[in-house]
Length: 404
Ligand code: NIG
Ligand code: FE
Image 1: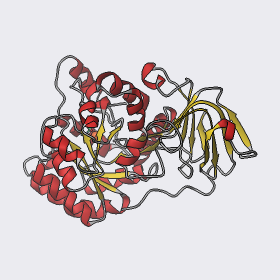
Image 2 (image 1 turned 120 degrees about the vertical axis):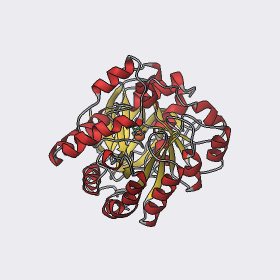
Image 3 (image 1 turned 180 degrees about the vertical axis):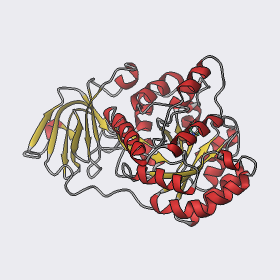
Image 4 (image 1 turned 90 degrees about the vertical axis):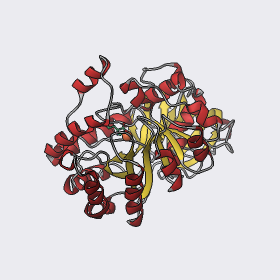
C-alpha cells in the first residue's frame, strides 16, 4: 500500500490572505471556541500549500501574503473529507431507483448490474466518468475523497478500477469483496480465495486500504476476516462496510482488526456501540444511502452520546446513494439523525480525516493542508439550515483556488 500524497511543492506557492471571515471553523480547539475551534471576525493565511496562520483578523501578521481575498463576513471552513466513495463505475441504475420508489426493497444484488456495465466499459470511459464525479464533488466543497474498486470483480477489472481511482486520490481502497460475482454464484468460497490470492497480489500495490461488504447478500463474518487478514498481510489497512442492511458481525470485526472505520453502522446493538466506544474505529455514517433506499437512518446521537467518533460521507455509487454532495449529507444528518449542526460539520471534515487516519486535512491549524471552503453564508450552520442551496462559493485545494 501507499501513503497519502505529499503536498506538491508547486501548489499554492503564492501566499493568500482570506480576510474579513465572519465565522472561521478551524476544528482546532486551541485556536477558538468549542470543538469546532470557531473564530469570529477572522483571517486565514495560506502559503506553500499549507495554512500559515489562522486567528482573529485584528492580529493577522503584517505583509503575510501577496494576494488578499475579501470574504465579506462570510463563513470559511476546512474542505470536506469524504471518506467513502464508489466512483469508478459505468452505467446507472435509474430503473432500479424508480422501482424502489414505488415499493421494491434495496438489496446488494443490484451491484451486479453495475459490475456488468463496468466490465464492458473501455478504460477512457471510466477515466472520464470518474473525473466528472470528482469534479462534481469538488464543486460542493470536497477536497479529499476516498475511492473504492468493487465493480470489476475480476483480477484485471479490479486492478483497472484502482488505477483509475489512483489518478484522483491517494485514498484508494480495494473492495474486491463487494459481492460474489455471477460466475462464482454457486462457489462463493472460491471467489473469496481468489480475492485473497491473485486479486490481492495485483491490487495491493495500487491501494492503501482494504474493505469488505460484510452484510446480508454479501460476505459473512468468516469471509470478511479472511479477506481483511490477507489484505493486512500485503500492507493494506482495514475498513469495513458494516451493518447497513441488517444486524451482523461487521462492526465487531472492524473493532477487532482496529479498522480505521466501520461504515454505515445502521443496525447496531448496544454491544456494537460499546465496542466502537472503546476502540479507535470511527463510525462513518452515510445518510445518502438511507435517503436513496428509503431505509431508516443510523442513530448518530446514540453513537456520539456513547463517545464514538462519527464521520459523515457521501457513499457516492449508482445503486444506493448517487450523490457527491456533502452539504446534502450534513443537512440530512442534522434533520434525521439527531446530530447538531456543529457535530455534522465536524463529522464531514475532521471526522472524515480521522476515518482515513489523516492528520493533515479536516482542520485549519497551522501546517494543515490548505484545503478551504468559502460559503455564501455567514456561518457553517447554514449548511443544514439552508438545505439544497448551493452555498459553496470558493474552494482551495493545497492552497490553489479550484472553485470560485
Ligand atoms: O455502500 N453497501 C455496499 N456498497 C454500496 C452500494 C453499492 C451498490 O448498490 O451499487 C453502498 O451502499
Ligand atoms: Fe459503500
